[in-house]
Length: 218
Ligand code: GLN
Image (cartoon, rainbow, N blue to C red; front, side, top):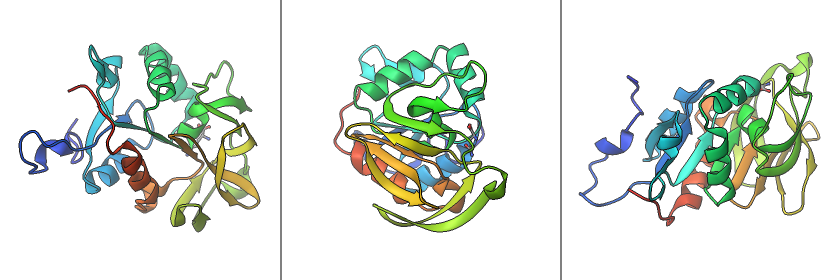
């Protein structure tokens, strides 16, 4: 893929043997490029994930962290199952891989989805209920400075979901218009909005911090 962020780690200038954080970026559909650029700017080695072998090798996980981008969650769900990625993704996240899901990515992470497309499934690795397209046509898209538990973040909302139920151990990280729009459970963070479109690195930096020190196969 001719993008300026793919394999960014190889251009890092780090001495041989020094490891950068390798971030798997689900690249089946949606806003992939913007996440890739932001992660590369933060110094990550970005690996597009399109097949199980991008995620896990014979010796274990091939990435230190994972990003599930926005897009259309029902389409991404279909593609995940078509490419036999749903199961490996679920296993990797459930076994502790630091993960950030944005917008459709949050829908994919959720245990339950309200207003799913016909037949739509989710990975069920974040114990929340998410309602798709919850703001309706009146807030189809908006840009704002959001107050979050990680600080003020400049973000865009686009046909955003909300979190309507938080399971045990799920922290609320932000609300917008009295609705929960950011949550975290252990190493899994789900946000309704798009910081990658405004170029705000706060959540991506937190993902890299969470991945620091984790061990992976080569
Ligand atoms: N409404 C979309 C969905 O349910 C999400 C929109 C987005 O990712 N910007 O997948």
